[in-house]
Structures are given as C-alpha cells and as structure tokens.
Length: 232
Image (cartoon, rainbow, N blue to C red; front, side, top):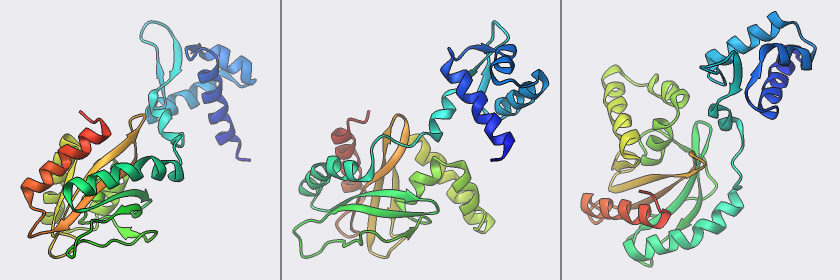
C-alpha cells in the first residue's frame, strides 16, 4: 500500500468520525504521525477543497465536497424500477420516446426506453455506449463536470468551443438542454438531470421527429418532466 494515500484517508476518516471539528495535535496523536506531516497533508486537502479550517478556532473539518466520492445509494436496477412508470407516463402524455440515460465516463448509455405507439417515432438502442458531444444528454453531463468539459471542449476548434462553452453556461443555469438536429438529422431532443443528494445519477430525456417535436412541444415536455420529478 502507498503510505501517503493511506495517511490521507486515515486523516479524513479521523476528522469525519471524531466530531468533524478537530485539532491538528489530536490528529497527530491519534494516528501517531508527526505534526509537520499532518499539517502538510491538511494543507493539501484544503487546497483540494476536502478539508477546511474553522473560522473561530484552529480546528479542521471535512467539507461537503467529500460526498462526491461516495457512490449513489440508488443502483441502476432500482433506478430503472423507479423510473419505468415515470417514462411511460411521459411517453403517454407527449407521444414521444422517453428514456433514462446514465454517464459512462466519456460516454453515455440508455438504461431504459419508453416508445410511443406511433408509426413515426424515434427508436433508441439500449446498453450501447454513445458519444456525449452534440447531444442534449452530453450537454447536461458536461455542464456539471469541469473535467469532462475541459477534455471534450479541448478537441474543438476555437469558434465551436466558444459557442458550446456559452451554451453549457446556459444549460447549467436552466438545468435542461436542447438538441436541435445536432446529433441526428430530423431529430430533436431535450434532457433534464436526475439527482440524488445533489449529485447527477442520470438524465431523463425525450426525443421526437423534428417536424413534430418542436420548441413549444419540447418546452412542454421539460415542464412535464420537472413536475413528475418534483423539480422546482
């Protein structure tokens, strides 16, 4: 085991499990480490945003940022069971294809799809990795992940990068994204993040033929999804 990693997690665990407001000396004593060693680790953790120092005393506490290292409580199977009736209702009320999608690193995958009983409809594939770029789903994940945004935007030409950066700012503010035939000709899509404890665990989207699923219908679908998911 790499000793420095072991010590970092030992410090975080000690702080979090011992009142979350502890002195440097207490950490050093409990973990049998030199105070200078603990001080250096705490400074690094402060710079990364995982530890902060109390404003009124020389004590340290773990910040809420640490929650992003915790896996969501809801697994994919439970999520699909919960979301199936929601997607079916969205399809019934919009007469368009509704889906639940999850991020897979630099890609996304459709976990659940609900298709309308219509001769003209959008058909999507389950359990297949798709590129994030130029999709409403991808815009949601990119708008909420600086790492993902930096990597993918870095592959674009300056003019295209600037345009997408501006759009992603709007997506982050509005908490939904559009796709007007960007990913596929004659197809329009909308996407809204699905969160658990303020973390995105998936995206709920609706896709339809461009001639039928236009801006007005897309906006109605966004409001419907927000209502069903109890998003204000």
